[in-house]
Image 1 (tube, rainbow, N blue to C red):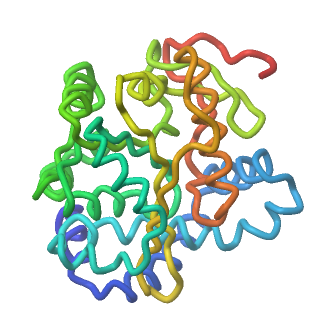
Image 2: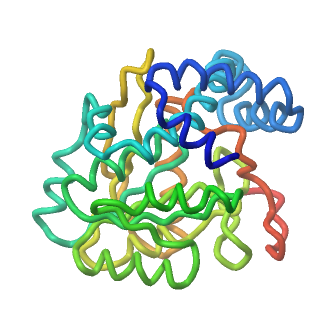
Length: 286
């Protein structure tokens, strides 16, 4: 049933999906007290109560749109998906990195449409993207098919997947990942994220250490009324250097700045500050 619903959603017009997504976001918000508390708490932690009060209603709707647009992005033909990118900012950084032939590390938080960057870039060259399998096993074949087509290759979030990412970067190819996910115990460090300790993966920082790699931050800003996306790409505001921990702290700061540029489109309902099983306790201050 879940697979059928996924395919039916992909068949709907894109604008209609975004309209339904806004309603789905509010339905989820109404039915889940835990989700409501987490969304509001994370927003206030990051932005303060005044700004959070201005943003939270739009954030509820945008989260629903983010969920419902995924089937369309993964199952529709890639050229049709790419046409939804109606504006691109920062492509000159990609061209410069391709000219250097040293590999590109795309870092994308759960902001706006995080699927569209890889889909768009794959029309210009190969990209390997780190993904975790969906929680519903029945959806795995459908989603993996959408994430392994054309020049897109998915890498599992395990040791073999990490080797796959390293190999791609050393071959001068592109890699994409979402480093604001909570890693497993032993795969992260407690680092500041919007003023609170968050168990933070160090993989992005370690990949940025590979010789010749260009690190770019990317996200697809969702435009109103189903008009498509503005794909934004930019280098870090400060150089990523030093130890792995120093780089991971800097990556968190870069993601904070990116999220503040469009806070309504961040996935605030995600349990970002949870302690994974087996991880040490969070420090009392950051």
